[in-house]
Image (cartoon, rainbow, N blue to C red; front, side, top):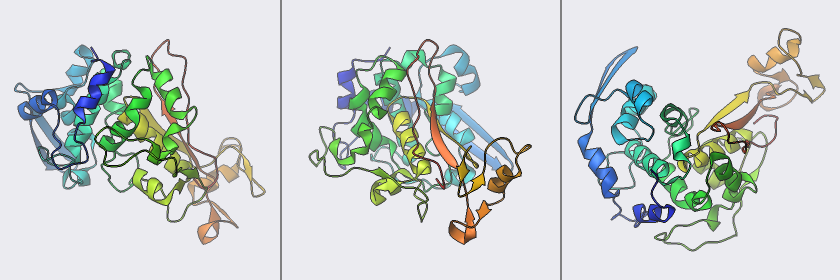
Length: 307
């Protein structure tokens, strides 16, 4: 069962300083778990023990909440191979990399969120744990997103209500307005992120979005997805290479079987606009898992056209 929502602030006491450590209930799970990965491309063998052999496939049929070793086994099996060799550093000295932070802060969100029992474990593994969606630069955003934004949803009683508190209105775009008790800075309303189409260089990763201060639908879909996951709302980026619209005098509507213009998007876009003389009429947005009976929800992602 989730702990009282006020307890989550204890788990991030000292975050942002070199004295920060995971709460004991997480560290105990971390120390019990041992995993080995053997690569023989294209095969990958992952074995985890806690102290018995952990099989995440069996766990989804008998468990509801996340635990460290199940989460780690799933991530090690599904993460891109190049991420097995390097990920950014952790926010705590008692971890090895960002991978540990992904697990630790996913467990915090899962335990603190009042709606967590309504989300199946299989959904949590697939739509809460992943730390990347594209080939964007790897950034350790989850600890910061949990610390900055969980307060917005801490008293929500459902996935839909939590999502509504994030995106209606878009409170998360006030980047400097959200801090946590041990943050070294004070809240400010002086910095808001905005939407801008067809960004160059492509602004996709969440910290790039914050640094530039703007992003297209791809950046928005990525940012909203990662914020949602960080606070315990299962989400994913989705998109289409060809938005169902008329743009620049070209009709992209309908199916590829009925309209040859639709196939232009798959082949690099139409000529006459955009970088390299081609225009990609793509669009990206967010999909959120809503448990049965939870009718509130929605998606974000900005406008179409070169996102």
